[in-house]
Amino acid sequence: MPVCEMNSSVGTEIYEGNHSKLFKMLHILDTALNNPATETAALDSVIDGLIDYMQNGLRGEEEAMDAYAYPGFAEHKREHDAFRSEVGSFLALVQFGSMPPASTVVEFLEDWFVTHIIKADREYGLFLAKNGLE
Image 1: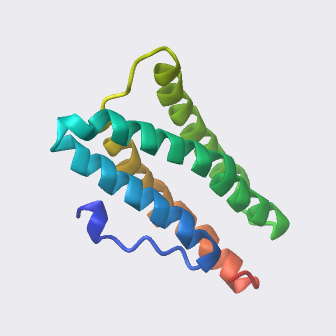
Image 2: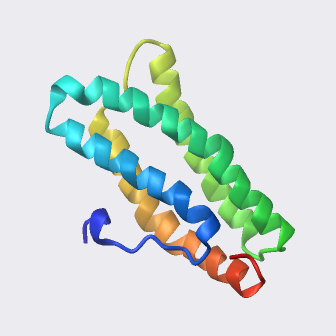
């Protein structure tokens, strides 16, 4: 099933905005794959967005999981750290005057949606919602 057809709701509205931004980034890159003239600009924009998500979105999720004593926090943070590492590798390419292929970033984001947001985030979202965070 294509990512665009999946329900990425995690049960807590506070984080839906972050996931919506990621989905928009994925759409931007997917569109750029069909128009090579816009690929570099799209990649620049998306990498900036991923850095913001990494620095703000993931940290906010981790703070909430810690504050609510989410039992899967350690594993969830390991997944976030793997995300940070991959985005860091994209950023390193940019800093050395190169760009990751847009198709690689699209695959990375699609995988993040399927393996992390739709599964792991939904689990913690339901836990947080049951414990009072909306």
